[in-house]
Image (cartoon, rainbow, N blue to C red):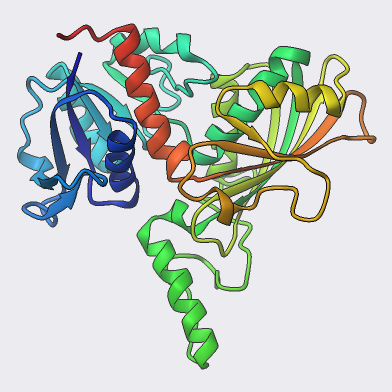
Length: 341
């Protein structure tokens, strides 16, 4: 079984990572198309390390007829235009933007967490990929929720600049270089200097004082995992190029010890437990780059609440937070629904 696959936004950070992961995982492809905006049309792009080059096609003129799956990494505005066209042509869209995540007719999927929800994709022919910070968190929460039922989550994130795209990565590099040579480090992409600094502000502010990124973590966790879980988040941009980190405080309905949690996480899908309780016995963002796992470290009991745990969670946001999760959704879709010789 092989599929005709489109990667929309193929020239961006996430789009390139989608191509890499499709190649790495040997996704069954009959034909592959790379599409992007008119600015990139005609350019050539690598299909992972296969040695194959793809000529980028203009998304404005692309004919979606006959294609099976489209992985979208083009942002909400372009998705609003092109995703319905692809879906109407019979191509299943797996969208990385925030546009459809809270649409009740669009499943929001993390395959290790809520695979059965994918069965609802036929209502719109669209499947949503969650926010990068949500994706890694729910992978860590799911096996613990199954074991002791989570009631409340308090999370603080340490999110890399790649979450803001190439412009964010360029700004960190340029500001760091400028500071070393004594030049100006004025912010352009971010609201304040990001080099050698942290910014407690991701996405726009809402009326209640939270940011949209923090709101996403709340509502997406409820939709993916359990609507009864109470969630509060503080999302912070840090001067790291790739890899999101999270400090997560969890309260449970039933008692669960740190040792029990470690044993559960050690066997959970998609998780790598590294928790040696010694110098260097934990994972940092630099170490997770290019890896598919969600790493969990520093699992310990929270003495300030009944049935509480605290843990540290790290993942490559361009992979599990975006491209890898999208490809895993495509694999799940193929196994459960797309029957093609």
